[in-house]
Length: 306
Image 1: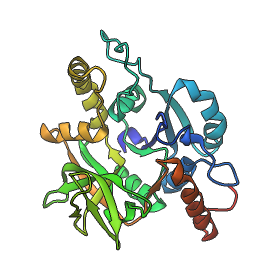
Image 2 (image 1 turned 135 degrees about the vertical axis):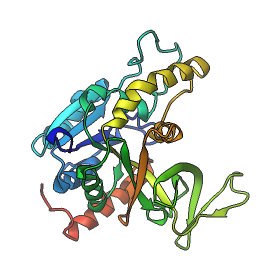
Image 3 (image 1 turned 120 degrees about the horizontal axis):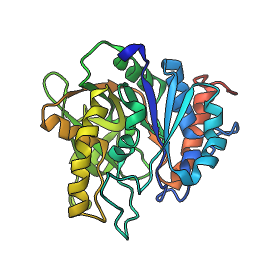
Image 4 (image 1 turned 90 degrees about the horizontal axis):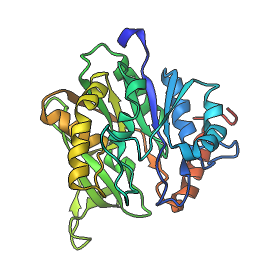
């Protein structure tokens, strides 16, 4: 732990919810009024996290605090960071027709002052990760290690698929030491008989995904050098991107990580969990998420009231 400070949980909750059709970040998923992120935060606090940083937008800040933040403040220290389209490097302005956010690297860049010198674990607000995954991330971050040795919690691919449609996943490619080499983006993955298949030609042909394939679900365990790196390098990539693709440029965390790996400025250990992931991308996912959480509560994984 750096300077005796425990790792921070960073919840990325500034999304537009366009595919879901609304603010899924604060959508109630049980009879107690919890949002899906409440379950991940509950597991995180149980694992040892004592601080939560919420990345949100100003336009729903009040609603977010009422629906989620005020409740979490009773469990952990809470900090709010805003991610807005007009938060750009000095000397640049937002293109006139730009509506698309700048991506998840930008979300963490907006947190640079809050997270400077800290280790942290990132999660999406609309995903369920499982207690074991949160514990795995926390335990990794509290171990003594160089500040540029990071981790990514990977899921067995089959534990991230659904029978209700196709999904996109980032497949982790590792070296002989289980360090991340790159993430291969696979789209339109379907599940059949417990195996995953992806297509690159719109479904004309499908390729079997290896049984031991590991998927990244945006749960990154970063030590302090990551924030230092994007403080030093992201603005240049942003300026290049906005000059070349003013309407489309964005950068994901995995792209920022790949940039670090390409420069040999750090390494990323792939930490595999056996937890089953599920999420709420589309409105059609909502009922299944509520049902799964009710089952976990009935099994005693979560208390009836908390």
